[in-house]
Image 1 (cartoon, rainbow, N blue to C red):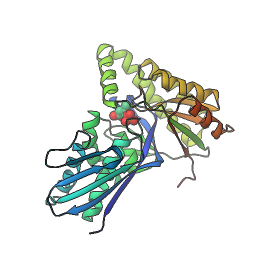
Image 2 (cartoon, helix red, strand yellow):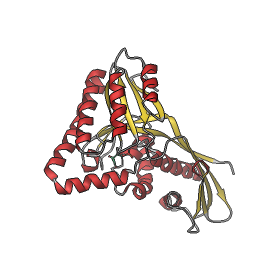
Image 3 (cartoon, protein in one colour):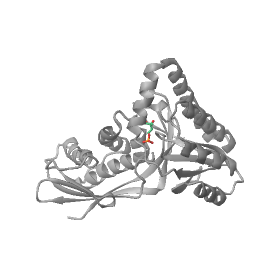
Length: 317
Ligand code: PMV
């Protein structure tokens, strides 16, 4: 039979990381220049085989799957179960250009793409929120108890305002154009470990940590209004305040702080870490007249491993 295809973009968290784990809002946007793509073929041998040539991983449902691939084997099975379809052989090939462990949604995009490929192979349809829900099961293995924001934004493929356990809201963009530069520190970071350490901090000093989360969530709520009707400078203020709070939470690191500093010195009106932190990516927002190529060049000189750009505007498709 013809191959079934599933795809999903990368993502970046604009505001609300960590706070979203405790019920506060977050804003996430897709990064469409990087993607996960899954090709699925039904086979006759009955088992499920997952191959990820980019990272040299392979595993099957016979119990030999390495840790990174095992949840995807289970995820493919769970899509069959969701539709009460009999188990059948599948070969699932994963290719992805999303850097791994940098808070750019690699795990979520692969999981969403797997769900979509199985749906297409079965000739079934799920809406984006249902896809995100199924993919979340696989993410739990990587993240522990993820808020669900990553799966939702890559499944929706649009900027979202997200509160865990509630339907995500699309964000209406007003007259301003918001130009972002995302720079990868090159340091892989385990979100699950950072989230666990933040939780341990909260267990020791709940009032202080809850006030951090409250402020991070407030920045996300204010930012939603700014995106609707405000300016890049106002959104930049929200990002800068969030970075201060994230530093107080101790989830930044010298490499992220350096990229934030370089961004603010070279035309950004806001800059902060994005995602779990302690490595991973920095997101900067350009001021109205700032030169994107100059900022990109400076970030490269400052050690950024890879750089991506994205725009939030009323007119994006
Ligand atoms: O996957 P990352 O590194 O972008 O982190 C997700 C954001 C957190 O709030 C830190 C965790 C979560 O589950 O929302």
